[in-house]
Image (tube, rainbow, N blue to C red; front, side, top):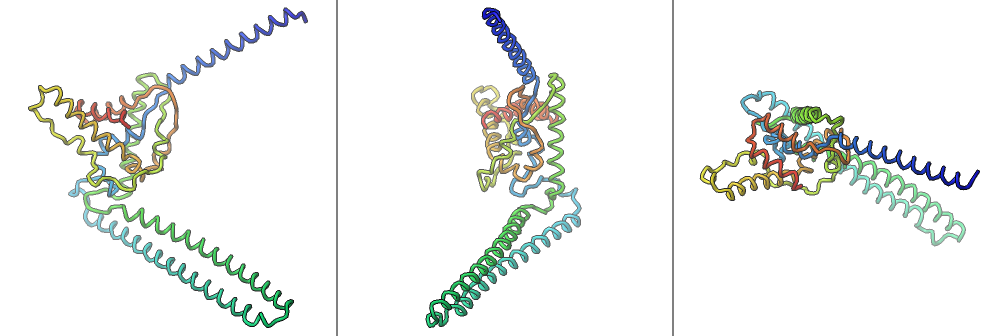
Length: 320
């Protein structure tokens, strides 16, 4: 082939490949632009229904007059019975662990007495045989000992973890029981999805994905939360009418609302810890159109939240 022709073909092929890749990248950019995303973690935490959530009890506050006393007492009794059963199991496992330790120590003493007593009086050959037998039986005893420790330790850890988790669940008049709590939380997720899809449709966004799964999966950094942590307080601060004409004071008022909402969000990992399994059924996407503020605004409007308060709360998302 003519060298000049070969060079021209090579250049032409390079140009075609570059053009194709440019079109592909442009198409991908358009696809990303038409993908919506929300910070699900923030939207869940700032949902108005969370104003009735008690973090310490891991339950929602409800009207006590609408909860049958007998039904709640029955559930509370069943819950306490489960805790009592777990307590008995834990004590039993702890006792078996102690017994395993004692049995092992006693077995070692018996083996030592059996194989070492009088061994110094034996000839070299028989003494070596007895020492070897001792080492074999000792290894067997140690293997059985550690196997029992591992099994009992795993059972004890499971029972203690379950007890710890259940002991933090409240069965009290004026609060949802665990089943009702899960249902209410699932309803919050469902409502968020509904509003998100509505806004996505209005914007002609093809797909709506979550951008905060990494936060949901994050390990809880704090072991406790402030005893007065209450999202409901964010909406309960009265607006002093006397500052209506003082722009700086008004800004300070709404800045305080934003700060309180941001503090609530900062403890989000701990607050949402009981609901991680529900939160994980979401995708992760980088890029696209962020609909978080619009979804929150639509939800606040549906719940008749003061627009100024709602806007101040929405600002807290940018602080976390």
